[in-house]
Image (cartoon, rainbow, N blue to C red; front, top):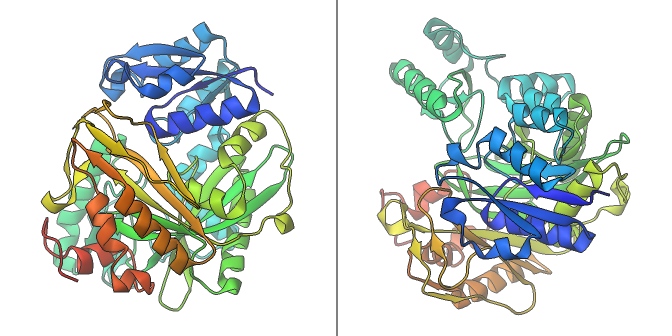
Length: 454
């Protein structure tokens, strides 16, 4: 086991990793930018090192400064969390070349699965169905036109690198294809320094279902079942739940497909295989997230597996302590992301000081957050303030618990997405499971910035 780990991240996930390290008896070193100098979780680390100014490029994305901090602190491993450099194969390679274990997959696997076109090639070899589309990046407008005609409109343009909805466009006719291609390329270049895009068939009103995997260095690979992440706005997840409300035989096939993918990619550590599921429960692979996910707590709640601890144990060379047959799900878990945004005004960012905070409690309620009263949410980073997670024996009971917890949760001083989540958990469509990846914008908030009366 490692003696000391550096957490190359901030906020909620930094605190989550610090807690896991403490329970494993591992010393932890936190890093922070000048904007995060007064972050409360820094006091829980054994040491905290400033790595630069507020902009991410000067701090959390600055590889030389992170490596320097690791050298000064004499750590054995680096945990990247999610976001920032967590899926950067160059960072993983640099960590290991400097004799720091990267708590994540090998850089070759990150590189292979990080490019969606490469991941689709691996999926095809593993006999996992993919959405029909281009075999690689689109090389010309003429190629895009020909392919779109062959698979039929609507089509979806996606950045070959990255995610989060960046470089993504839906085209419903030929007239809009070329302008959309150029817009997607420009956005992908700005976001990922890679303008490559590919084309695939657009599946109308699908559900977004993902499978959590764990793979150790001894050749053992398991899945920890599935999560439904269909509640999204502009490809950003709002609500996640586990397990997905699918027939058991479909869930089993999803898990088996994810394990085949991981084996084909030579994958190690935690990861997530993401799929689209159509109205007939056919599923299609879309991508792999080679890191811990924001929504990992719902899987933890239904399986009892601490995924962050498993990441650390796997990276230290420990074999998985369970077999596939020993991983079962119990009850139903849900998570909502509480962001410092104003949903009634097009999700306008709302940084500022938190003047009041009332955190809900009671049976089955978990609050993962790095904020406290007096904390100032900086404008420089992701707007996530916290994650409210509930667990109950059934989905309907989980919804009732979440409604109660959301009513107890009070954050003042900034605008948050709490009112939106209260509406979602009282909406009949959501309660009865009649939702998909477009539901928020089609039904709940059909007009920009104006809530629906549904």
